[in-house]
Length: 71
Ligand code: SF4
Image (cartoon, rainbow, N blue to C red; front, side, top):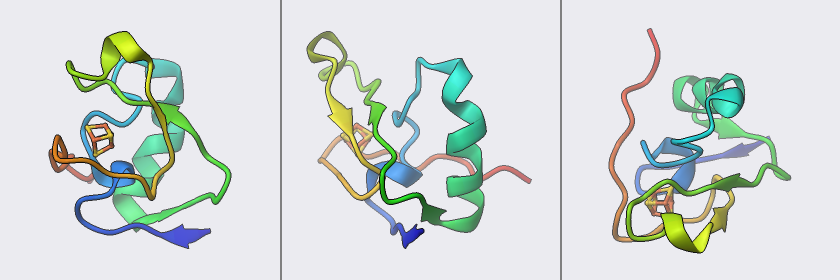
């Protein structure tokens, strides 16, 4: 597991945003701020979506928007 920080994809609302089947992987990252080293998900940001950009939890871009951590 690796630590993810503010501004990185693992904590962004667009990380696997349009893949409901992946939410069980994304939610623990938001809660613990730790992610598996080998996880790759599609970015759902409107400017990336048509490109099917694949990112890791440690990636990042200027489109970062903080996701609300689960309770
Ligand atoms: S690439 Fe940018 S918009 Fe997409 S998940 Fe990562 S930080 Fe968010």
